[in-house]
Length: 300
Image (cartoon, rainbow, N blue to C red):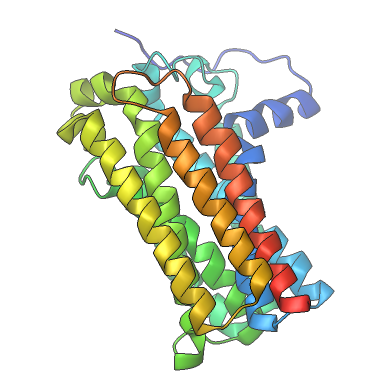
């Protein structure tokens, strides 16, 4: 049996510790969610937001993701230790101590609260609700096969946050674009998390976790991923018709649809060898493509 290592003496410099922590939480993957926060922001502004809004939305999204992943690494240490794919994570080996992870989580939480307060009174009011999902999604795989879409919904809150930062509202009919964008992100992220979770079927079965692939098989998970991504594109089409948005947006949606189709073609029930290409490359392209297309549609 693999055990979580006790925190050994660590002679790394502070900069090295920070670098190892950022690698642990895959900070570079912020690119998946950040463009959708910006999308919510530019849609609400009808173009360029103020520098104040742009800066604090960026701080808020980076802080939210750092906090959520720090919580995730702490919550999943026991499971990561028994999974060959994650057993060498610094949080498992002890190179990154629980105290350091918790410290970064607290700092990120404080920055997120400050950002919310400086952006909008409504953002601060809704902050505790967002916190429930930022913490709770890490535990959802213990209870429900809907965990993949719960993760997607949590990331989708970035779009809601970007919109609130500019409009200061979210519960009126005029706020429909923000909800559509949030739903699009929910199914997009949920779909690629289904693909990613297919790597851990045997481990999740052994641990009694409720990932969709471990409960219903890889073939079913990949089918649900395709269905989720089709729903994503349909929601984006509805968004483009509702707002409405010009031709650059539609080019972005077409390219994103092609990228998602290609992503799903890379993985098969009996061949997950192209997982990294499907997960990392394609999804970063999708996020950036949709942001650029939407932004251009608003300014041209």
